[in-house]
Length: 110
Image (cartoon, rainbow, N blue to C red; front, side, top):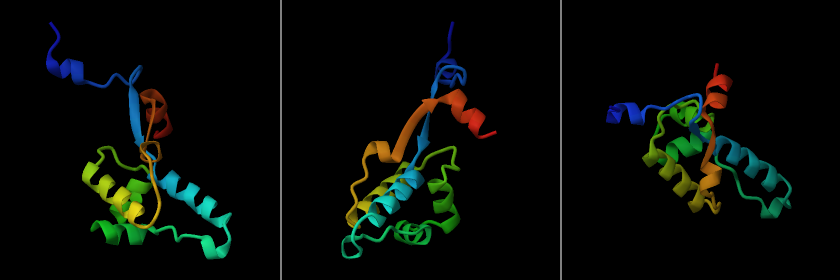
């Protein structure tokens, strides 16, 4: 008989891992904005600006943007997305999260 705890365990050999990609998104935005005329460019927020806007420590924001978190705080992620939207950007779900085989994620973090 399989318990509920057994069915909820992640099998690192076959399951997926969801990874936060906000740092990658901000880097892509920097490249896109750099290609525009100076008068049309939007300022990409810094780690400090995002931390201040969302009320978290800069180290927490740095770790979030660098994908150095094991447990995502959805309230914080929502606050970052909302702040980016207030700044005129339009992040989509695939800009925030990506799915990879869990084994790849585990091996890349070793």
